[in-house]
Every structure is written in C-alpha cells, then in structure tokens.
Image (cartoon, rainbow, N blue to C red; front, side):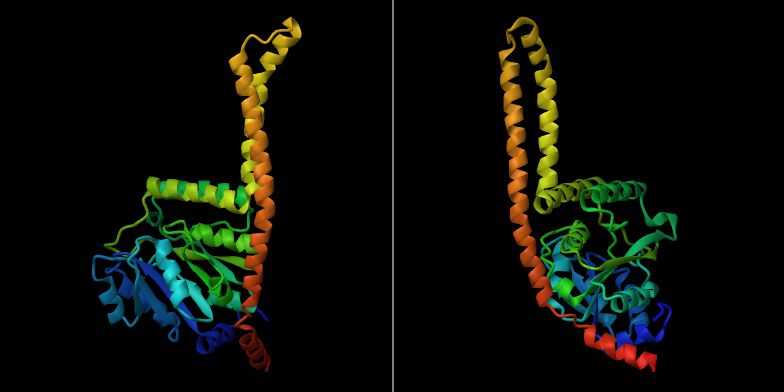
Length: 332
C-alpha cells in the first residue's frame, strides 16, 4: 500500500481513538487557534490541554474552544506530559505544543506512517519556514545536543527536542516519564532507543510562535539542565560507556603523571616526588574502580531493560485489528 493513499488516514481518524495532548503554560493568546487548527484536521480527535499551572486564562480559552482540560500544578513540561500520558486513554497519542509553532496539516502523514508501518513513535522533525522560529542560541544548542546525543546513544534521531510526536498506546503506557522539564523529549528519545522500539521521522514545517506569546525555554538555564539530563541518562542507561570514559580519562591522566617518575627512577633509582607518586597511584586506582563500576552497572542494567521490554510486550498492538480491517476494505 502506498503512502499517498488518502483513505487510510481518514479511516484511522474515524475508527481509532486519537488523543491530541497540548501541554501549556500561559498560552491563552494562542491556544484557541491551535485547538481549532487541529480540530479542522482531525474532527473526531479528543483534544486535551494540560494546563501547567498557568496564571492566565489558558484553561478558560481551551474549554471555550472545545477541548478538555487537565490542570497540573507541578511546574515543568515533563510533569504536564506525564500527567497527560497517565490520565488520557486512546489508541493513538499526539503530542504538540500550544504555541502554534507546529503544523497541524502534517498530522495525517504522521499518523499514517505510525499505523501503516507498525511503529511506536513518529517524530515530526522541525524544518524552519520562518527565520524567527528559532532564536540563534536555540539553533546552535539544538545542533550541539543532537550531535552529543547521537554519539552517546546512536544516530536514530536528527531532532531529539521536537515536541511534535505521534505515539502508539503501548509506548505511552510503558514510558516512565521521570523528567520534569523540557528534557522530557530527550527522555522519550532515550526510551525509544533503549527499548529498540520501531520509530521514524518525518520533516514538518516549524514556524514562529503565535503573535503575543513568548518562549518558555531559557537558553542557558534549560540548556544546562538538558545537558545534565543527557549525562544522567548516559550514566543510567549506558553505564559502561559513561564510567568507561571516566576510567579512560583518569588512566591517561595517571600515566602522564607517572611517566616522569618512571623516567627518574630508571635514571637514578630514586623517587624523589613522593606526593606525585601517591597521586598517580590514587588516580589509577580510581580509574580501575570506575571501570569496574561501569561493568557491574551495565550487567545490572540489562536486567532492568529486560523487565521494561517485557512490560512493553505485555501491551498488545491496539491498532492491529483495525489495521487489518482497513487493509481489507481499501484493497476492495
């Protein structure tokens, strides 16, 4: 079946439960427009606004526009996403922002890809249609973090920070969601990679925020937080890599400290710099301990991921029967 079959996504909208989750903080000026835009594309979808402790009338505007509202008092996008994932029941989940930057017209293609290719997540990667869509610091940070992420976890994603994603039910219901802030997208990407879930990316248009709204992302503060979270994910999910790199660095440092001492001993038979010798031995021992720690945690982590994989497999493919019926009907 070809990707350009327009009957397929329309049938999915009509028969599958589609939930569009919009985590929001003070988006009263844009939320009505965003809800209307998604409603026009997917009339049958349940649109849920997760009001993340807004101090404006985001909730009132969302209700007036026909959306359901969940109020999450704990601040941070991660808390809002976790609340939405836990409370909303659907077959297909769509995550987007309430600021009007993501293109609702791309949603049919994203859902079509998820259903037809039996995927657990499709990421709408951001292709700028307006230069103002990104601040310069955000653009540079995105490139840096995507590069670091690909080196640590593999190059399965080109835009780990995209907030425009479509998920299967079994992915959502087996995702732990421990992040509290903007690092939630990074955690989602790590979870997909470590779970070896089938995923894909599709380029989507990314525009400037709705007039009168401003970005909640703080370049340096949230950038530092995201970087620390990437390092934490590395230590947690790839401990051998994390502690192995530390061990390698300490070993090189110890060797560089110790070479002059060895040279001096070979020439004179003496070690005159005793404090340096003690430091060299201490650094090397720390390096060995780091290596062993990574080895132990790596073996322990295998068991943890086996449990997560089994939990994932316990959730049946909710779209399987629907996919079979649609194929039969369209083939006719």
